[in-house]
Image 1: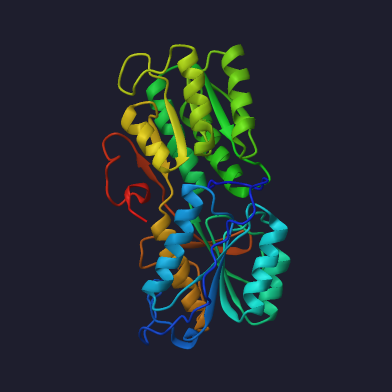
Image 2: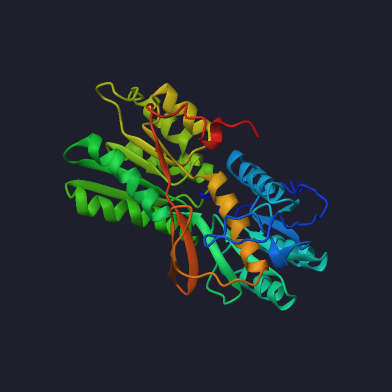
Length: 351
């Protein structure tokens, strides 16, 4: 997503079928940031992952990372896919709980629609951690773990703004604005533009996390306005923007005169290759490995009955209460030609 990918119709049947496993205790100690592998009272608790989908590199990698973090903790994770359907995701959560899962990690399709399922899970005694996306406030959410999407938008702003150096028009391609991740990415970008680059005009359009809509918006804007820079909320707009620039003879490699600054959020393999090729100035990576590790760690802490509180963590972040929910926001990584081959980037790792 993530993205952030938001609800749309995708093919059914992408769910990964895995046996529900045991989250075994790996020690007796706990960590203030939830990153310890000790399960304590959470030992022998079945856990499940209610994913947004599995049909993109981002989403499938996130599921793989969650599964790996569960194994690292000494157990296994049952993975389900909502295929972008909030009703299916709610049903997946119910199925995981009825199957005996005592810990659920959810990547929400819709922030509001998932809350009843969260509350039903809690009534059955399950603990819930939100990963990547956001869910509306509920006392039954232990914590939300996500990339700092506002910061990612600001990072994109700096990449584009610093290279334009003066006046011009920037196209802000928003995701689905019924999704907090898309809202935060766009707000981070536009707030930064207003503050640091007041001579740049920003044109914002939502493509609702749909590549076809993004393509149409890009074609229209490039045919009617001279676009001097582009920021996109996800890799779904990478192809359309490159095609538009190429059609105008403006697809100039980064670092060369005439290059149109272009930044995209997610850090997909496609984005990193475009950075290598010079057709993308920067990819703003969401650190999926960290998100998965922290989410599993926080779930362990919740299963032990330990209280999660706001404040600094052992893994270098700070838990804050935002909108009535504790959130552990992880800093994104700006990827340019200088660091595009870094083996720690999730798109450079073999799954």
